[in-house]
Length: 308
Ligand code: CP
Ligand code: NVA
Image 1 (cartoon, rainbow, N blue to C red):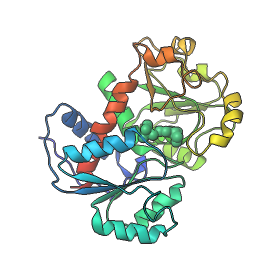
Image 2: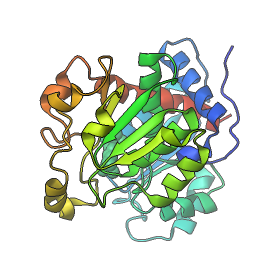
Image 3: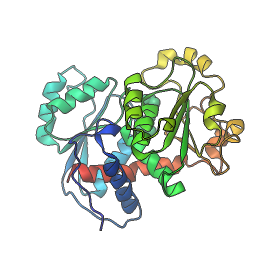
């Protein structure tokens, strides 16, 4: 029977903190948790949640996942804790390590997350930074696996901003051997260093493509994925980005260029009629709400391994 395994890294800050085997193992565990074929308890274990940015899916799914594992969460709202007053991360991290068994952080700078991990004696989970959203990528590839059974010959086309979600898709896709194409306007490409890392893992250089042409990426793809054009913290760039991203909307026309079996994903929350039309969110090809549900199962699997 499949069981949670101890992971090679203590923290989950990046998709690359998992090996290919560990990523696949977590997806298998997630499937078992989803089908209620696995009942493992980590009684009274505590996950601390430090969210500097808003969240619906990540926060609630982590809370429910911990509760299903027999533990619970403590919400360390930065506004009402001393974090908001500017208490140094190195102090907060050491204090929280004394109370919690795991800590999930959602913040702006990835270096702040790394600072938490440096000082925490308990595993730290990236619940989204400006650089990466690795928990999201696990749910995304679980959804893709449910649809296509395995990752062989799957082509994922991400149409939009080369942001945190795109970065994690690139890295996790490289680990799993999925062809990932990113179509973004010039100047909005994914992080250069992460691209380099993803390329170094890919067994074949054709598995990773960056283009400025949405049609080129969508053509013959099996998964069409998008995310908001302006992420949290980029509110002042909205006007400029809305202009730059004209033509990058997932709409009926773009979807018709993908394979007949293509599915549509979005990490949510979405801005309808900007990065995706309401019609495509509601369409038969959309797996967006299954994908959102999978946040729970994939994180339950991840937490179970980090607690092992
Ligand atoms: N997709 C995602 O992370 O959603 P939340 O911002 O609601 O957590
Ligand atoms: N790229 C988005 C993802 C939200 C889940 C953001 O960072 O705001």
